[in-house]
Image (tube, rainbow, N blue to C red; front, side, top):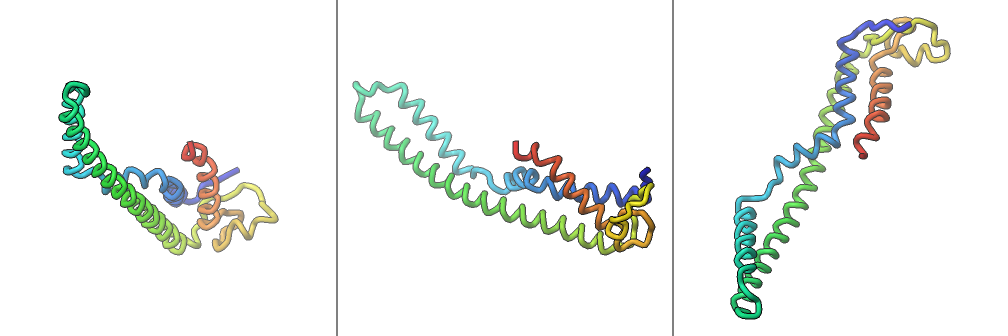
Length: 170
């Protein structure tokens, strides 16, 4: 039988472990807010599309000079857009790495401070006597046959990461 001794802490640590496991998923939308195409890039892309549309109405055989002049402009704009895209991509990777590290550090610090704060609080009481694991499960709590916050976080973290892994990697 299982008795929940501290439901608030059970849910609190469960939510923190879920957030910790979902950091890779949360990084993408957060980083996307910082790295977007500039208005200059959008204007260049619109101009390039306009030139391509204009070029399609020109016969290559009849007006070769005009056609190739437009093609050179298109190639120049395409080169600028590719260069800006590479810059934006490298910036995006740096932002994603930074956001990932910051989120993971903040969540980890919250978990560590919370574990220190609630180190003597039992989370769940077990009905039977888990003989060989009694002292490991209850450490540092003094409650008999209980699961401490430390062990609860460890169990939750491993379980949640194992359950979420197929969905994240897909």
